[in-house]
Picture 1 (cartoon, rainbow, N blue to C red):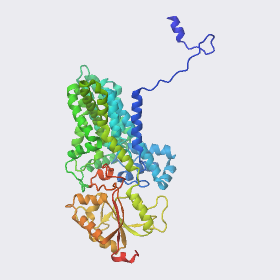
Picture 2 (picture 1 turned 60 degrees about the horizontal axis):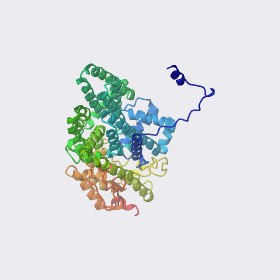
Picture 3 (picture 1 turned 90 degrees about the horizontal axis):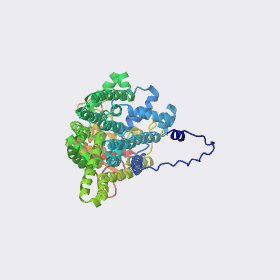
Picture 4 (picture 1 turned 180 degrees about the vertical axis):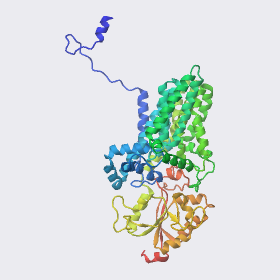
Length: 596
């Protein structure tokens, strides 16, 4: 024993008789490590392919108005965002990234004014990094709940799923929320398998952070409760579960306040923002253009393309298999998607991206269900087992792979709104009066970083007809005195009448630019806005089409208006991003005074 201890003691390299040590060899990564690394690399590349789409203009209204400008605003007025309609965790994250990347206030201010592309690309890549982190955390959760095969296949499915990929290309909080959701799932898996206090802390911290990124991220509380309930019902687990839930609650509260401190420091503002947010999804505003009236059916349909047909049915089959094999897992993974779908589907407005918070749970169920199916077939034909497993993986991820490659190609091409603008710069002189439907931000009429001195007088190249106010309430039709009623993007079609063409010509607004994401709302609900259809008919009758930019592949389209497919370009008919853009030239009234 003494000799052994002597041999373990460190010795000087200069000691007599010392045998030179062999250089240490790095351990080769295991096949599992290489597979996970490959999935993460592909995941990240799919999320940054086409990341500059639309630039230098942020055409998504939420991206243009919320997180990026709010993060920059923190440099000017301090860390209270004074805005809680969306929780501020992603805003704070971007603020930190901007501080590091641009060197602080002056750097980000100057870049945002002269080269907004760089600012938005940094913000979008940040979202993509968060999405990639979520995929890795889902692998960890799946490995804990099932095994490495399920974890890897769930991560691969999550990595190629259409909706998480598309919204990784936008500086919004949908995808960043997935990272803390998956972190909480890692903790919930640990609770189920080990029941340690540390697992409760991880699950609680992930829950708090998820809610601080997006309020609906709080749905991940259900897996935590399900795992705790399993421990509570196990022999001798009651006290551990109660104690663990107390720790999880404290961690959730701390995580939420760390990422959203002014929820407590400015509680009245927080409460007002939260009250507003809870009414948005159930608000009739923006309902024009909804192609379905049943939200539950809409979200079930969303699963078939946002995740895939095979994953949706595989997840359903997995619940039946788990009922036979290990029911505890059902209470961890199944309640959240079901309850979330029913709750969100009960609102009067619904959009595919609102379903994203429960994708991680569905991916875990789908991966398990598909592997169980392959294993069952493999037991009958053992020689075909490897082939069956490969086919199962391809079947599960195939639809996502196709949609991921499609959207990458689409987003890497010029947006129709930008190519239309290029044509206008070449063909419509500065100071010309134009009418542009609200399919572009206000900055679209300006040259970024280079105001046109002989343009509209405010730095814009052209003089825009105001589409933001109307002397009639677009909802009730009642006359509004004074400045008139505000007409937002959602109500624009309700304010259109054929008489507007006369007003355009009388005031020399001779160029009218339309976009299918506005006109389509009226076309799918013609009975709601008959005047809008009369307006378009009158415009086609009296206006000459001088330019058209289509987003569709040759011989494809048009795609009927839908609040998802018209904006995320999922159908294969799309070749590039943007709506169908049409430029009309009016020649009646005072427009006749302008030479052709």
